[in-house]
Length: 308
Image 1: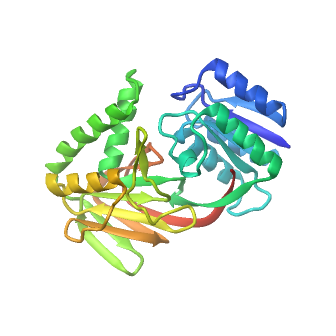
Image 2 (image 1 turned 180 degrees about the horizontal axis):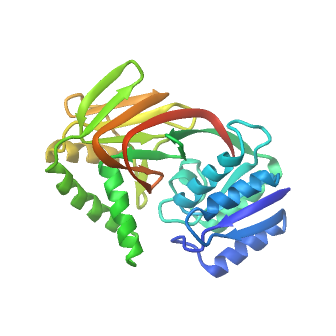
Image 3 (image 1 turned 120 degrees about the vertical axis):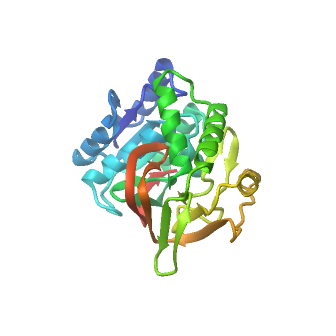
C-alpha cells in the first residue's frame, strides 16, 4: 500500500525522535513517503499531490490544524465520496486532537500508529460526514463570534512564543467574553426554511460531539450530533453572565440542553447561513480564516473514508 505521511514538526506533542520512530514503524508495513511541513498550507499541498499521485493512504500527524489542511488538500484534488480517493489516517500530535478523539483513536502517537497499522491490515475504515464553511472543509467544528475571537487571540499569543495550554484557552475565552459582552449583537442566522433570526452574539457549528475538549474534559455543545448526522447549531442570543455560565456548566457536565430564551439549538441541520452587520471572524477546526460578512455552512454526508 502506498502511503504519504504528512508531519507537522511544530505540533505541540511531537518530537524529532518520536517522529522517526513513527515513520520507521509505518515504513515497515507501507510503501511510505514522508513530508515535513515547512509553511502554512504545506500540508494541504502535500495531500493534494498525494491524491494526484494515486496514493492509497494519506496520514496526518499533527494537531487538528494539520488534519484540517490535509482534508482540504485531499478535496482540492478529489471528489466527495469517491471510492478511489485515498483513505485518511490520523496520528494525533497536537494539544486537543478533537477529530481523532471523536473517532475513538488513542491520544498517544505510538498507540495511534499501532492502531492505524492494525486497521490497514484488517482493512478497517469508516465513512464520515464533514462540514463545509463556504469553500473550506471542517472536521469537527466552526464558529462565528466568541469562539472565533478566542482562536484568533490564541493564534496571536502562540506566534509570540506562548505555550498553548487549556489554562491559556480558558483565560483567553474569559477575556474575549468580557470584551464581547459590551458589544451589540451583529449576527443573523437562517436555518433552511425553518428559522430566521437576528440579534445574535455568536453561532457555533458542530460536525460531531464533543464540540472540543478542555484538557481531558469534553465540551458537549451538541450531543445529538455525530459524523453520521447533519450539523449541530448553537447560538447565543445574549451575553449576560448568568445564562452564559449556565450554558458552559451544562456543556462541561455533558448535559447541554436548549434554553429558548437565551439560546437557539438545532441538530441534524443540512444547511445554514450566517450574516453579519459588520465583518466578523470565522474559525474552522481551530483555525481563524479572517473576517466574513456572510458564511454558508453545509453538511456533506459520507464525504471521506477514514482508517479506524
